[in-house]
Image 1 (tube, one colour):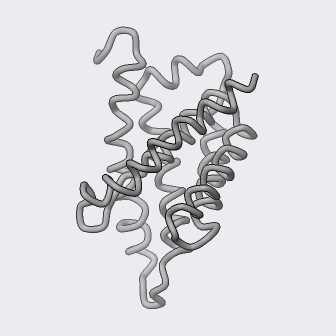
Image 2: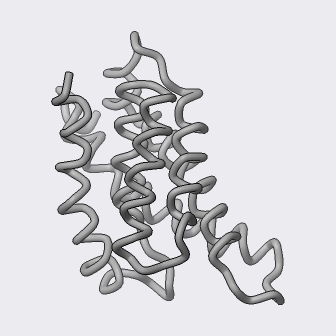
Image 3: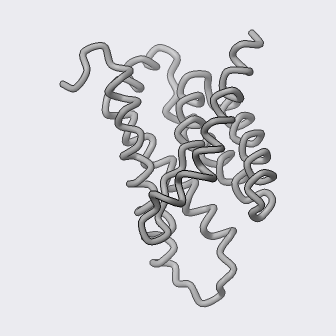
Length: 162
């Protein structure tokens, strides 16, 4: 039982280091993937909406503390993202959702919601348009995050690429 709660935290530690150190190096014009969000989406689909929301809240709070950003921004956006992902949760279809390309659709939707909310909260400029927030803060980082979710689908399926 404790293993279910400890495993995501142990995965979070190296992902947080990667997110803070390596992701700025691979960002394209301030568009960057979010590896911690992939972890939250995966465990939300694995264990359910409530578990995912608690995990998103906790990991978001810890990431807000260590990243030095606006306190509560990642915490709120990861929690809302896990809430949205929880609607796709079905304990009978976990393997189907994770091993199929439907996981990438779920990851894209969840990433868009998370990164749009995070961009809306953390953006300090007052003259930013709504279309800019949707495209630059939502869609483009969601596509980038979804691209890094492809290996999770490929390696979790039994047959590989179909």
